[in-house]
Image 1 (cartoon, chains in turn orange, cyan):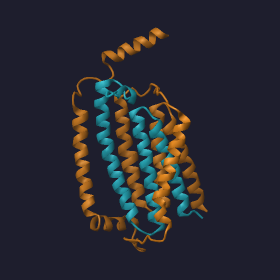
Image 2 (cartoon, rainbow over the protein chains, first blue to last red; image 1 turned 120 degrees about the vertical axis):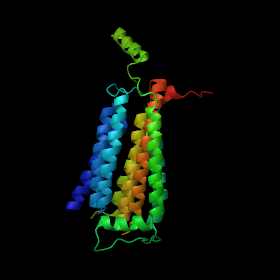
Image 3 (cartoon, each protein chain N blue to C red; image 1 turned 180 degrees about the vertical axis):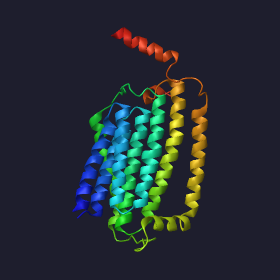
Image 4 (cartoon, helix red, strand yellow; image 1 turned 60 degrees about the horizontal axis):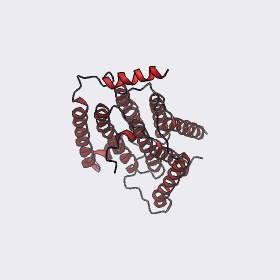
Amino acid sequence: MYEIVAFYLFSALTIGLFIITVMSKNVLYAMTSLASAMVLISGFFFILGADFLGVVQLIVYVGAIMALYSFAMMFFDATRDIKEKNTNNALVFLLGGMSALVLVLMFSAPIFSDSIQALYPMHEGAGNAQDVGIVLFTKYLVPFEVAALMLLVAMIAGIILAGKKMDQSLTEDMSADDEIMIVKDEK
Amino acid sequence: MIGLSHYLIVSAIIFSIGLVGVLRRRNLLMLFFATEVMLNAVNIAFAAISHYYNDLTGQMFAFFIIAIAASEVAVGLGILIVLYKKHGSLDLDDLSSMRG
């Protein structure tokens, strides 16, 4: 009973918040709803018994990635509404829905056949974190190290890309001033 | 009772929301948000399959997806800052410099 209520509550809230993320014109609203939807997704993980994955989702997604986004938002002009020239909206919805449906059918077809066997089954006595640790550091040790290397490369790339010419301001250059003047003239 | 198909349906809905966002967004930062939505949808599907088949592989792949998403954000935001310095906007239509 508890699981059913939690599932429907989380799924309704997550879908609604993601729709706000995708449709909103304001970057701040989109980012806030994305962060709260990610918190709710970690709730899904806790229902599913993947405790460690839920904690990682909270720490990495909500903690690190959203903090990174909000730092990046301070560089850009976040309070202004985004003007987007939208092409045919109905066509986009139709194409997006159809291709997503096709993808989901393609990838879920093997699941509903009976050809799936558990490669690394969960143990009854051990907790989820212990199980994850044992499998991660035995069977998935090489991908784990490669992921660590990839994160190092990404960190260096981020520092080099964002760190160049950090002494000059992004928003207070001449073009931004001109834009403000134009807006004032229009009023 | 909540079965695997419930979770897969929710994951498919969230994935299609993200795909619609990728198709209709013109701002690069919003495009990044839409890709995050799609990655999260896949993570839900992985965790659900891992739970209902008593298999840890799904959770492992979800961990690696989270690591990949983190590095994607780090590099992508660096590129966005460089683009903003160069062009003054993040709109995809302004950035298309290879018009034929």
